[in-house]
Image (cartoon, rainbow, N blue to C red; front, side):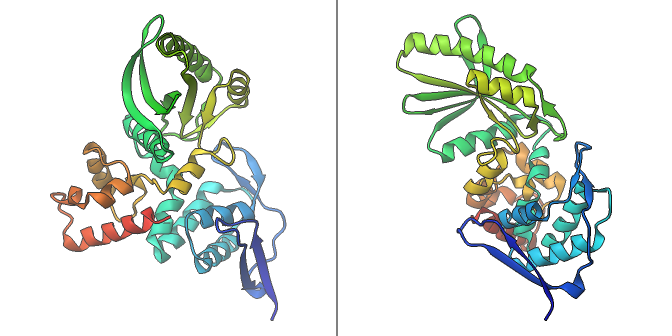
Length: 304
């Protein structure tokens, strides 16, 4: 039988993924250029699509269906947003949990309009790594007082974190952001070390968007930690959320946007929080059948 196959470069369990499909089902394609959200035009990278589907927890059959659909509808100049919508529609039809994880970037952008839920999410990620975390603190620096989004501490290591949340994820944090945060960090560090000389301090800038090249260059030069949607490559925001299973409730496909906002207003930020507090859904007028459906999706999303 004439077949087409693709082997994914890696999986979490160390195994490779082999997707085999009949060639007759797939059009013969030359290099196709796609348009990213930033407007950049790049060659379509099928391996990246497979990897993102794997990370969502999609099974081999669902991945094969997505690839078939995307390959059938590819055309020169198609946007990555349209490709994402095709993939999401197929995942939602086959497995809501994978669809929820796949739309992570959009889900984080829906944590607004304030930045507080995003700060809570970042705090939870560091708690997962064993840090004691405080969110939304007033801290006295050597010269002035500062509003600090997140403070994380483990033993003698203490981090000051500034969270830059954007509903528009095409925006970028330029070099002015780390320049400003570095000056605040140095003022607070001086005050902290005056009281605790052995304290090891570090500053962070965290965003759900991206950094410019100059911002990354400056942060690297001065030792300021930067965390964005795709940076650092293997420890990015996306990678940390996927690895921890700490997905925001805005990922859920079984809830309406207004219902998600109601949960955010009640300080339910993570699917994990809803998993351990299902009573938060009471009084929202969902009905027992829908509550059961939501909780099944929550359980599936929380499962790594």
